[in-house]
Amino acid sequence: MTQTPFQLQRDSFGRLVLTAADGSRHEGVTPVRAFPIAAPDEGISLINYEGHEVGWAERLADLPAEIAGLIEEELASREFVPEIERIVEVSSFACPSTWQVATNRGAAQLILKGEEDIRRLSQTRLLIADSHGIQFLVRDLSKLDRQSRKLLDRFL
Image (cartoon, rainbow, N blue to C red; front, side):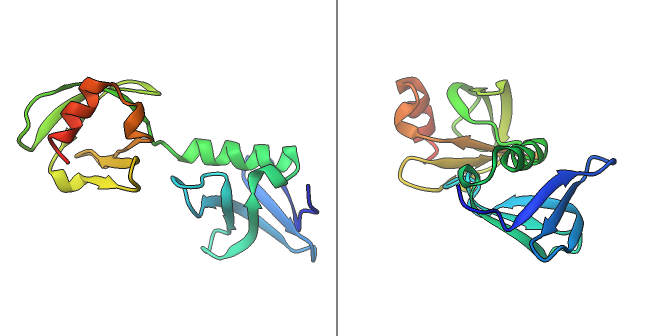
């Protein structure tokens, strides 16, 4: 664990307050992942209310547990990207189509407006946007069951 160039705590309103090594205080900072899908625990920027970066963490694991915990809590409260574990049913192979899926957050329904809403992030990773703007992640195509891959292949 390296020396952290900043301190982080919550104020009485529950906002994050960053105190830099030079003693300057920044209230209401927001952590932002540089690579939210590919490397979610690496490259965390701490942004002030004006949108300026006031702190940077290379890796969450390198931070003291208390600071890493505050950052993870704040990120969890702002991020919602359910992971598709299984595609249960697809209403139609023509778009728009309604998908019934099982995610790491429970059963969900998404409406796929068009095939362009399925974005390939890597050879095995997909991001699917539904008609309401919710992003669903397929972390690893090879880990989906055969029926799910078969349904998904019709759209790729």
